[in-house]
Length: 505
Image (cartoon, rainbow, N blue to C red; front, side, top):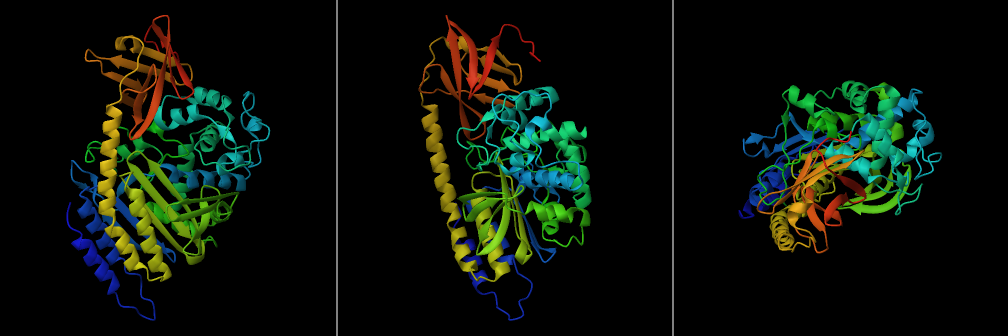
C-alpha cells in the first residue's frame, strides 16, 4: 500500500485555502486531491463521477478512476453507471405526474389496479398505489423481486400472476414503513398494463426527454446500441477485486425499483429540477416535483451520516448538518449511487461509483466535504482526516473478506445422497427453470436465468450455499424422497424436478 503522504498534503492544502468575506465560488480542488490520493493509496482503480449543484447550476464535476480496468477506460462525463435504487425517485415522480394529469389515482386500491386478479394473501381492497410507492403496503413478495431484479425470467403473464401471490409482511403491517422493492415492482406491472407500454418508455417520454437527460435510459440494450461507455461492476470484496463481477444488468433485470443507467451531468439536471420549485425551467413538472418532496411515512433511522426521519415519494427525508435534506442511494453488486439535495440551500450532490463495498464510505465523506464547503462549516480538515483512515479500512475489509471466504470454503458437505443425484432440471411455473450440473470432480454448478453460482457446503442435511448475487449468500434446500431429489427450494420458492428439459412455460 502506498504511503499516506499525498492525503496529508491534501489536508494541508485544504487548511491553507484563504477565507474571504464576499464568499467566492466554492473551490473543490482540495476534494479532488483527496479522492485521487485516497484511490492511489488503496490501489483499486475503480471509477467515480461527482457533480455538485448549487444555485441552479453545476459548480463542480470530478471524474476519477476507470470504467473498465482491463481496457484502462477512464471515467468521464459521458460514462454511464447503473444507479440501482436511485431509480425510485424517477418512478415515483412519473406516477405523481400521471396523478396530476388525471391519469392515475393514488388512492386506488390494488383490487382496482388489477381487476379480476385474486390476491388471497392480502387485503387488496385497502392497499393503495400510494402505499406501494411510499413503502407502507405491508406486502411481502420475494419471488417477484427475484424475477424482476435478478433472474430475468418473466413476462407480462407471469408478473401479473406473481402479483397475485403477494402476502403480508410478518415484520411490517399495512401502514408501517418498511423499505423494499416490492411496492415499486407491483406498481410497474400496473403501469405497463394501464398505459399499454413498458414503464421504461414512460420514463423516457415523461422525464428523460423533458429534462434533457440525453444519456439516460432504463434499457441496457438502448445504451449499448448507442455506443455509450458503460462502467463495469467491481467489488473490493471479490476474490479478485480487479476482475468485473459476473452479474451485469440486462433489459429483463431492469425494474422500476432499480433500473436505470445515467451519467453525473444528466443526474445533475434531475437535481436542478428538484431545486427549482417555481418551475421556471420545467413548469409541467414543477407541481409534481414539489409534491414528491412531501413526507408520507415516519421512521427513525440512520445510514452512515444521514439521518432518516421520513420517506416522501422516492426520497428519504431528514436533517443533515442541521438542514433539511432529501436523498436516495442505490446499491447493487458492483455499483453505488448517491443522490441528495438541500431544497432550502439550493444545493445537491451526485456521486456514482462502479464499486460496492468501500464506495458507500467514500461517498459519505465526499458528501461531508461538499456540503461543509457549501454551508461554510469549515470542517474540511476533519473530513480530510476521515479520508486518511480509508486505506486502513480497505485493508481490514479485505482481511475480513478473505477470512470469511476461507471459512465458507472449509465447510463440509452434508448431502444424504451421492452428489450426482442432485443434478437435473427443476422448474416453477412462474419462475422458470433452475438447472443444477455436477461434473466428474463433484463440482456443483447452479444456473437460473441470468444467475449462476458454484455451490459450497452448508452445515445442514441436503442444503448448500450459493452466491447467486456476488458477495451475498443464499441457501438451496433439496428435498429427497425415496432416493431421488424431487424438488429444490430457494427461500420460499420451490422448483420441482423435471424429467425432461422443456421449459414449463
